[in-house]
Image 1: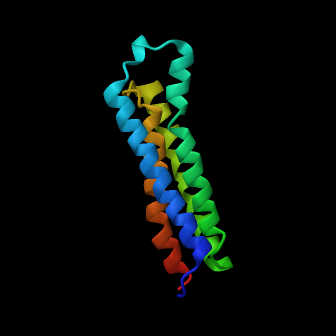
Image 2: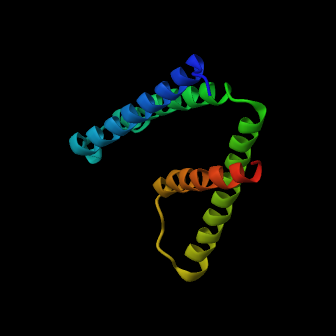
Length: 130
């Protein structure tokens, strides 16, 4: 496979955006005391990590757009499978919370579940087309 400058730029943007996101989250966790923040500052600091996260997502989208139709189809199907699994898991667990008193989970578990589902779905769906 020949190097693709736009793809490489997109993946670099994605990687840098995710590093910045993680750095902001860790620094906020060490330095901020949420109960001492005004509501306006609370909103600002809550949404600040989303700036590099959205920028990373745009880099990912830019990189994915450089692939051929088959690879984009695999990416899309993996995303749909991850979305479906996440919906099924979140609704199932929600019913367990309501009917069985299962511990409430933070929304912070949703994205890692989607990401893990996507990461597992990619190679499985990729094998289908080989």
